[in-house]
Length: 425
Figure 1 (spheres, rainbow, N blue to C red):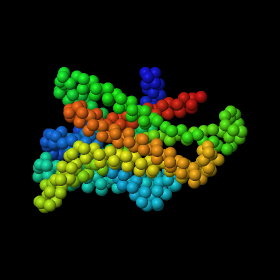
Figure 2 (tube, rainbow, N blue to C red):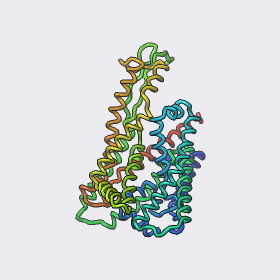
Figure 3 (tube, one colour):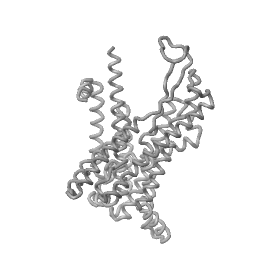
Figure 4 (tube, rainbow, N blue to C red):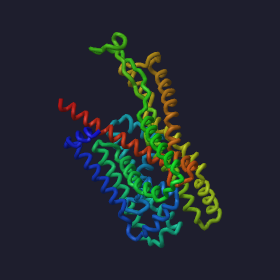
């Protein structure tokens, strides 16, 4: 391990990339601690500490929302814009064609539309958050000028983070947006450890030990599922010099299908969706219309129920896993590419039978991956129900994002090391 670290820092180009990413993360954390002018941050922090839903929203924004910082929304609006664009791509074939068939230029156009959509979404979410905080008496009276200033600063902060994420992605170390969310989660770890130490009770020693063991098992399970693949044997009907395996005039290969094809995206998507009903209902609960206030209050109480919240969250994670896998993996395209290259799956005819077989396999594999992701998402509710301690909750979503991002970063760095070793030969 230490030898690998030494190899990384001996390579000037790779070392500079890692140092640049660390510098960007420092800039991000500094921005997350710069409050918007005219806001009492202590009252806001107290409000977020007392509400689980908004505590989750604060984690999603990387801690910037708790401080009402200039990056208070985090990359949330950008992720929301990405969800909308993915849905629109399923509805409008032209968007799908642009993204999948026009190559890099089409993907750049798609990404540009996503960025443009982020701006109005950030402004709308800022207005909604201001109204929500005011309805809960966290913010005092604001003038029109205050509204304009806060909306402009918060929207600019989101665009700034989006730009930082793209700078990180360009360095080839990992996905920039995921790394920013990762940094926001990790930065809260010392506070969590401090809370556990502050509430330490020797009579719960076995509970703490069980919690530690469960955490280790959870991390190990996430690593195993993230790396698990189903390899489908592929035969290419062409003669390759030096091939020692397979039938004459053929060569054997494999098509790997990941169990967790969608990564952490379903968790992030589901979390984004789950936050809106609670936010809107809390906002409308202060309405002067008795009927609207009553309905909003019931919805807020419903989402405050951990059983209901957990079940809906689980279903959304499973649904988004299937949805995102369908977007990223197209059996028809894979079957066509195999047929074009002279490849086929053993005992499966090329063409439509191959498409049906791949559909069958990917649905079975995705089901197990989706159920696992759903279980990890609701794990904090399960642990809290058994321990009865709010501090002893394994943040399944947070752990999944952290582990997935770390694995992806390690793979990217290893790939760059291998490429440099290959270039030196």
